[in-house]
Length: 370
Image (cartoon, rainbow, N blue to C red):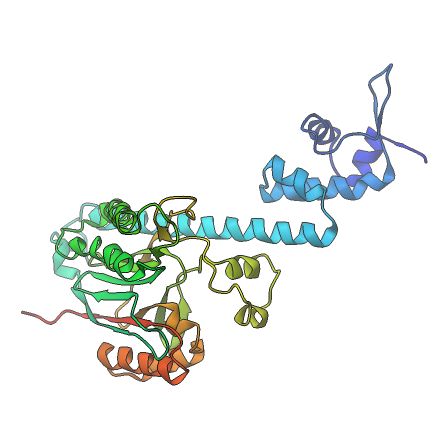
């Protein structure tokens, strides 16, 4: 087979000879032959597609080790690996985007005001609307389980749902939520709320470990939000969920840490297949005891809130049996958080109530003047 010189191969692949030499040094694309006397590189025509793939993956920002793995895979498997890589990038980018938005907002709020400039005030509080949460929490055993291992809590700042599992699931979920309750009475400066929340999560992790002991068969999910007065800080691990109802639309603002969700992200399952998958409740992350426990690192980020928002935190006893369209309609129809929580628990039990079901519903409203 006729070989291509590095110059001809560069023109055919639309890569520079410098890039090809770099890919050779990085062992991403080795020449088919190197002249032993001159050191001149020659390439086979069938390497053109490999060259383009390497260049595309480099532009995506894929690490060198990842590119080597993708090149060794069959096309369908390579496509799944690229999809999974990009899903991770989007998740990381979303977290950084939220943090950047928070920093811009926080620094804008703390910037000095110019009293002489029209439309501004020397007193930041003079043009700031005070907001607060109206909330309700409800937990129910359901129609099948002998005991309730869920914990639901709502306070002036803290909203939380935890779904325990194993023989000590109830005390595990209770311990995780108890570890966050101090934030209800703590001053929460917006600039440090994420640090405070991460410290609280460490406390929750330790509390669950004390309850569970050396086994990772006992543990809990945890989905919680903390109100700063201008934003909501979210912490999430497991498959309990947080939803936002805004302008009639329902948005899920958490990502399940389950085997089935990871298979969905990678394109190995359809939504319909996921619903009936036998491992749909298998957790990849949770707060557990010792042993070879799943990665305990939760998702922690900030979420912008608007007046009129309605938030729902729930265990999978609701989300696994009640369609999201029904959840949306129920949230939209209920006049207040109490009625919404009761209606959602009733909907789960009307669907068979196979699991404990817990709901926290909170509305963001203008504070009433004292």
